[in-house]
Image (tube, rainbow, N blue to C red; front, side):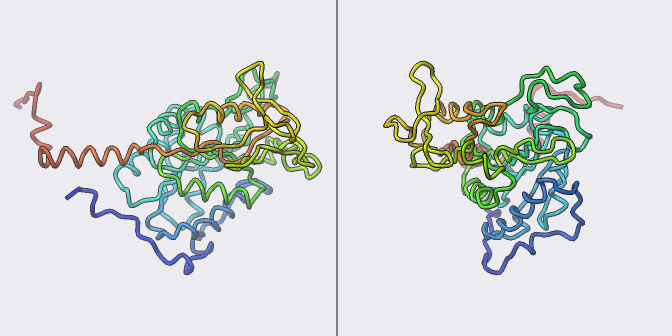
Length: 347
């Protein structure tokens, strides 16, 4: 019998659980107006839909404002090391298939010191859900520029403007061959919950970028996407199987640029308007969609960019162990440690 047979996700009657069941007794403390409040409320209201026992859920975070999440959720959780949340989550997902593992990270925590861990968790397709809160600034440490800050950004650490070219988190995730990649906005509760729902149903690494406002150190960073008079002309809502059209009057679309390998805006009635296919194994189109974004937030796609089936690393590992056990029997740890080039030092 597999050593993992004793572990299993234990469902409960989700009708008996409410958002209140997932709220801890800790006082929620972020700056007034922080987008994290909206994300937390949406996440807590969504969790009962999973139909899982709270003890079958783990929230792992690194360091940053978003990393306070484990304190505010009545589940298991770990406020871990700066940038290392994906590594810890990988160990949990591989050793405990009975757990639904979520990572809460930020653009600084996840893309700077933690960039290597993030990329490899996605590449390996570990069965974890990684939510990256992107406010384009270091909020916890008081306003330094981050890996997603726009070039020329004036901050406490770049008084003459940032020289760095910023990361595009979606392009990075797609380049790492993440099997699920999505983007949503903190203030769009309905869209946020729908993206979380799809991420939770995915088997493998699910990466979700959440555009999030920091009212103290980078206020209104995404205001064009929230302003009722501007957002519909800038926001491209991706829906699998539907034509990619947008605009206040639904008069704009996305087609392939005939002169480059990328995409471009066109009229909605153009017969070349693309139909979004999130399940396309080749990530080329999804990557091109991620490149529509620019510093001015002129054309910003949100929704699920990619959702493909691929064996998860943790399942492949468990299958490998089970096969080895069937063919060779249980291993002997003492024999392993004393095999090969070993020696004993006598006192």
